[in-house]
Length: 131
Image 1: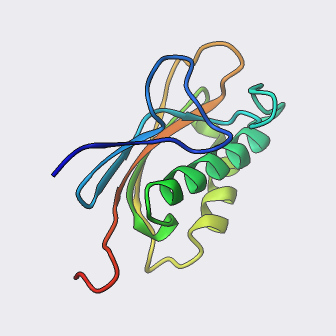
Image 2 (image 1 turned 180 degrees about the vertical axis):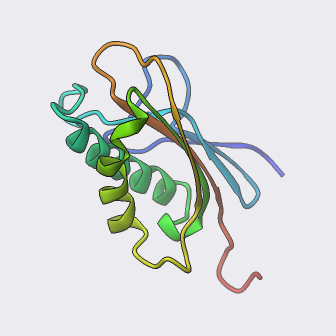
Image 3 (image 1 turned 135 degrees about the vertical axis):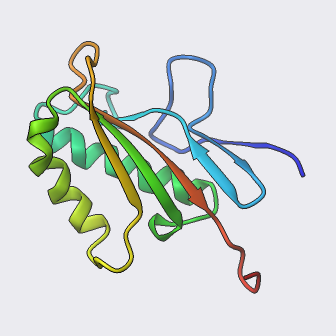
């Protein structure tokens, strides 16, 4: 089994690292922020950064062969954890079924620059016919 680097159009890191890495059924993302795919700039508000971040999450998991349904755990870092309502609004759109959501851990962090939020995720991607 070989490790495979995952890249997603509209998302990249400044350092020479992929957006995610897949080994077998496991997909682990790197750090994902709320940046505009066209400009690389952070969204103007926390709400916009949350939307952009989840757009990147979706593209990255799909580039790895999965979907949002493949995500089993997200870890989120926020400059102000007390503003989770903005995160929860996008979370509920991505995962509307209370019986079918990934686990999530949200922590407060001293984020750099204009970054208000960032996340990473773990996904398990089961190929068709394999269960």
